[in-house]
Length: 74
Image 1 (cartoon, helix red, strand yellow):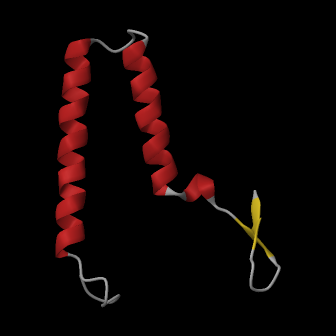
Image 2 (image 1 turned 135 degrees about the horizontal axis):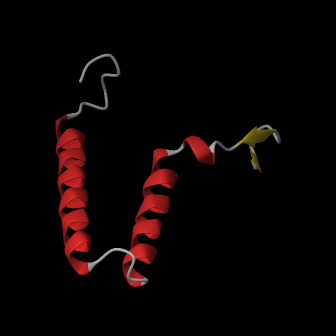
């Protein structure tokens, strides 16, 4: 898929398949469908929620500690 660059009127390819946000949303949607259809039980669903919360808390901590003004250092 491409999008039009408004400054140069050039088409730039979008790399959705390489986006971590795309894969996170796709996996969250897949897990949601599996829970709703009963493929994943309620107990397993709670375990998955715990893992997802732990990962998200780690990412938040990384975002707080990261220095966005210095690309060479953490």
